[in-house]
Length: 466
Image 1 (cartoon, one colour):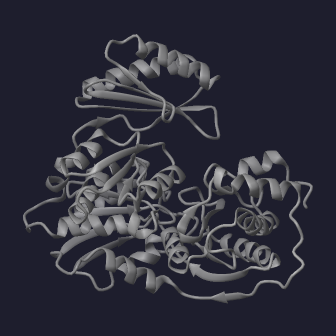
Image 2: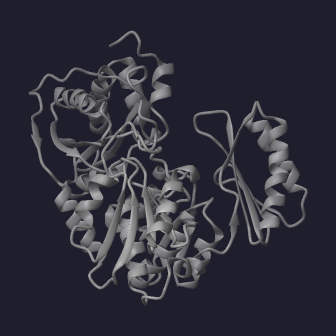
Image 3: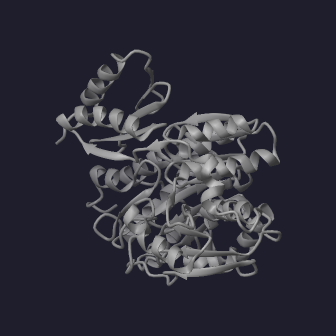
């Protein structure tokens, strides 16, 4: 074991839900090899359903990916487990492989992070997430304290292109054959959307206008992080220039999707969640829909109006996936542009969300715009997430709680951080998992009300800012 591998280094690298760090200062081939070994041992210790006879590995377009994959694969094989190389894929493509084959998986990506980063999203068989409480703690301990030697035969390596099967499966879930012709501008951000989109839309009735489809892990045009408004500007302009019906932006590993209407306006992921929820409830009346606690109230309203059951969860994909499995929910959505589907092994897929949205628009009459279609799902004004670094997260949270507790009629919920809610508004503050940050989200029916409660909370938080 390398002397450079310390607990502090591993805690920086192994996050709440994945592995992610700067290459090679934080994440190098040696650590990748050890994580590969530790992943297999952790799965065996947990006696995961489906066993650990094989691990499928894929990677995105980052230049550091192939060597890190090779090292990880050696670690897996050293522990007597076979490796199936998928090659280039989106993260949801890797999830598909783990679901189709019922084997564990590892996706090498740093998602939307800058070029110097890389990482691993680990999955148990059937695309089940691996987070701190479902494997990452054990992996950290094994890498730090030593991995048991395996004395049997080394695992073997094979390769298989599963991307065509991924495309066929998506098309089996959403029928686009009856959709009217649409002009669709898609910004791949030089990420894996540029790899997947041509395959998915090869035989569609849509005119695809590609932006930044060249795979380039240096991200020469803009960061592949569409949750940041600055990274949507090019797409918004192009939608207007092309007189397109809709715009779609994918993040670096294409597991998240964001949408732009024909007027160049950004659509909130909450509105997309509500739209897809309505579609899924038409397919299965009375089904359960999951949403995290900082999505818009409009999601629960739409679900209830369409005969479904809305369940609120904590923020974070491992939480939402677990609740979906526990409740057999048909669909789930997050404010961050992650959309989860029971028919996709409860995993998230930006591409499947995009197909649902395009099908919804494609089923309307030719004079129906995306902005008019989405209007019924966009009912509130949101602040967006505001992060503040504070000296003492707990002490600051207590002060905010004392303020709102003194307002008549305010209800307080501690499901994830603290949520303060009244008839027409809510405010949530929650701590970061990795930094001394408080994240604030607020929403109200009217903009003035949202700004008032947002600013009241921020005034308290910023008094304690670092």
